[in-house]
Amino acid sequence: MQKTHLQRMWQHFSLPTPQTPLPLPQHLSPPPSTFSSPLTPHCDGPWPVSDHREPVRILVVGTAHGIDTIVHTLYAKGFAHISEWSRLMPHSPGKLMRILTRYVRLD
Image (cartoon, helix red, strand yellow):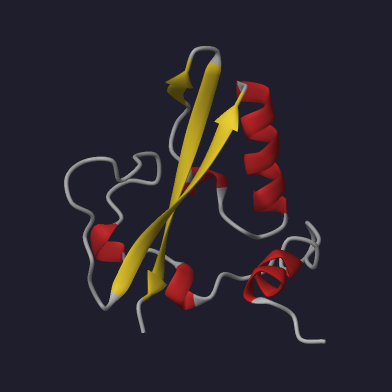
């Protein structure tokens, strides 16, 4: 039985160990010209689209401790460096969030 796109995507979360992080494919890394600061999310104005890339945002919402646990776990698995996430920001009463922006090819 063939895996669905979602199953193939999620398999990356269990493969690497902290000693062998999964390298990010080049098409998932932000282009240097549009990555202003590792601590600043791209929240202002229109998103820059170049090289046929589309920005995709990943939000983690919860308590500060819960969010940091997820961000550090994803770092240990090689998904994203901690500095690529935004600072903690308010989301809703009693909840915070951090945002990660990735760029995917449109073709």
